Image: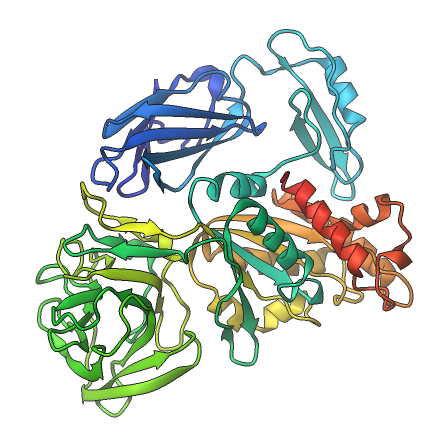
Length: 596
């Protein structure tokens, strides 16, 4: 028997098959899923399992209240393709989700024989761009499945598709993000890479996400990239369905933390940005706010508020002894249960033999005002191999006396460097058993759109502007929407596609579980220039996307197949969609993501 053990406390998966992990042939294996909730805040809660098969049928099972629960996969779960395993826990109306684990099934249980007549009939339903036009399968014999093989020009690659009975259209992993991630109480990151067709909240992408958020009851936040300042602008709340997402921390609660292995800190300096509120800013109690500060020998640094209600910032050069300061910044007059921004920087050696530690305040997290600076002899900061990034406590211990809410935390690789702390705030995981669940994620599940699109950009803009990639935070999961072409002028062919692939690959490196969707732009019309090159690029992008297993939203085909003249879908410039064209793009996006 093959076993897959998911340790929810550490988000670690251990498979009994170490030779072919994450993939197997169902004919050869009976597979048992083991979910170990020991050490989580919901060890005694009711456990649930949501399985999404490759044909996007679902099976939701209650697994009982045990700290360790099991489930054996059956034939209906082991269909060829991607199986998404999504465990979660419920306690009344409270729900706690965990990262989705994905398993590739290379051969379907009792279903590896293809019926020749069914295979031939399926071919007729695929056009040259690998789009499923319609599917009405023939009657199949027992243990047989419908497939179609399509050879695509110009690369000559052959793609084989398994099509479930009654299926219409094609669905992908990006569909699962919308249908599973948000519906299970998790947050979703989206990265927009594009030009004027996607540059603001009123673009097709912004309007599509807003419509979706309104219909499904999610929050939507939109941050545009500021090319002049080489950073993302402050978040804008495009749609608010409920309370802002945050982590609620109470006194002596189990700490929430991100492991050291998830944060690639290499700088000698520190740059920490926090947005948080306290139930009582003037409590007169010592409170740890954000820290890597376990026992002696592994101490790194911490930010705290002292019994005098002043901010403090300390670090250790050797893992035990401390250097730092109580800053002349009092929080006693802050309004209770109201969030405030603070930034702490340490220039460990300013080149003149001194360290410089500075505290800033901000109203939006972007523009900052220096409020206190301390100096001393040049120093270093110890980097423990095990100390986690903990909020509301010194490290993993249930101490800190912090009673409040954390909305946003950034940890930059050097002063003004890349935010290397995985985002969003809900990424922080429970690290200790806490029977009362006193440290937990609150607020409405949220879509975070990091939009780097600006009018006039082309693919080479993303090669030249390296700060765009550097400014993107580390993310656990994200959907990357790539939509560039109409400013690429005459570029096309192998060299062009290599540049596109390089840009996408660099963005994917910032994401633990990336999903890429190539949005092929609508066709151009006179008086626009490079009409033919733009059309060629669209075809080449589709071929490139399928070669790399990326998803495709084909706006070009949608415009052509609509039967509406281009002059009625585009503005007078022959490039930008008018109101009718944008509506068609949003409708096409809904169809792609299979959203009602």
